[in-house]
Image (cartoon, rainbow, N blue to C red; front, side, top):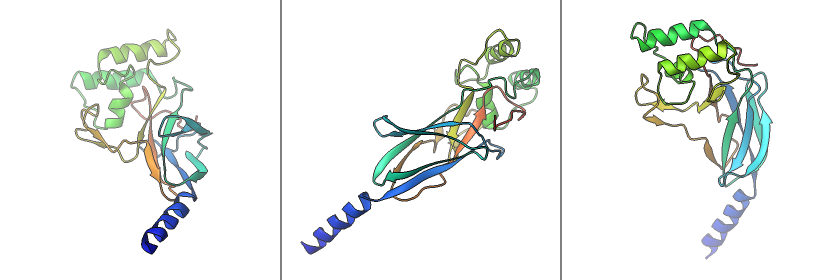
Length: 196
């Protein structure tokens, strides 16, 4: 009985503690992504708090109760033309035609501007319409975010076989390396300014 009582007291003490959840947002090339709106939700999807990443791409949520599962929901919808040019269309077209394959799975994900889980000429048409000012945003988000622990079963087809992309964490202690990779939609040649 004494062992059970001590276990219960220890458990209650652990769950009465608080911890910090934080990390950073970087591009696949390691550049910090600023101005990301980072929402903290509980497991039921209720919004608990919101912060914005600094110019160094960092975010933090201090004073969270341990023993709870939290979800990080990032969003960045500003400057859709940031890093998008006709050269990106050329890169995408050469990939589609088999002339020069894009080998970085994050660039393939960036090229899928209409979120169809594929890279087709429709993505190029959509990007062209944005460049020409015929539309003012992509059908998908201006930025896409993935956990830094993501693994692609087939990097040449990153739309299937993804693992390690869970934005949830059971917080039991301070976690300051809950990191994400930011992908600028439409930018295939790394010309976006990620802090903007």
